Length: 266
Image (cartoon, rainbow, N blue to C red; front, side, top):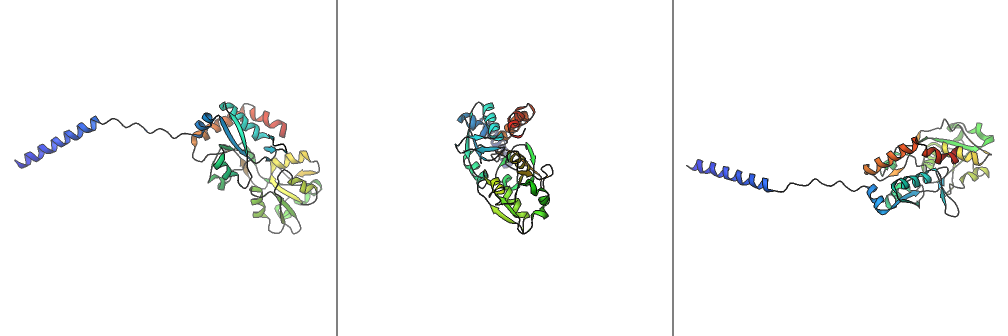
């Protein structure tokens, strides 16, 4: 009799548990986390970090006016979203920190690096580039290789805080590294005889050589390194990253990027 009572109790408990489970309201699926894409549209503003000192990609003149390929591209992105773009000044040394604190995207010829990738996402690359020298035209043959450059008495000017400085410090052990904080006037240091050369991205050397006939880019189509340029995006936000990638893919193939870049690079 005791076993029968015990079995009856188990059956009753099972019925109660089943009834309780059936009467419980179904759990709603968790809502996806909000994306920066939603934030910028709701805000009506795309906040864009840029250094303003790296033509042809970004430039801020003495009046505070902004121009450059990536500045125009940022305005195009904002326009596709039906909002405005606000440019936020930053420096190469504080680029990622300023971006994470203040901006939705960072533009201006930013090279993809592993260190930056620890702190942010990148868009699809839109330019392949690499470090190469720019010097006075009469010195082109003198600075063809890193071995020729890394010699006592050679002065290589760098803008602190970016990949140019990193590359120079990694590769120049005998040459003198000369820091110049203003990237907008740094090439004048070579023209004035205060430095012999600068090693920077090939795209910049070609643009600067067009502006200053006395300067020549050294083998820009065969740079010392490989790098790619892309736009900096919020870490972890795949939704926003995918939207920017789709916009960039269209811009690269529908003539938008070519139209914007043509006045700068021909």
